[in-house]
Length: 155
Image (cartoon, rainbow, N blue to C red):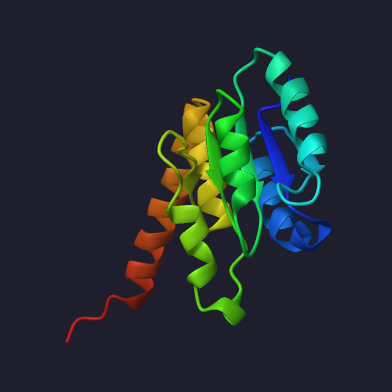
């Protein structure tokens, strides 16, 4: 059983995907990777989705596509599991490329996360990985308290 299906629009997205997969591993989530473009290989994408959706096990899809994010919309419109878009940020577009992730047609509702760690955290929450999430939150709190103590100076 695979917890998370990570679909990237092209292999150029792999450096961003590697950050996501490391975070998934840290949360104890299994994953599969796929490359499929909503623009260039729609039939291939739909075949993959049909295969993934045939497995009734709970899962989350994470889509990674830069520039135009038709990938997330097409995936979301064709699956019943949650879809989270995590596009790589590109300085060249000044954030304008994110508009295609924010404005989806009515009835198409992928979530949007920009940080690889946060997309893995949301997937873990959706899949009910309470123990891993609690451990992560404790570590975050401990680090902040440690940072506070290292800077605490009375004057």
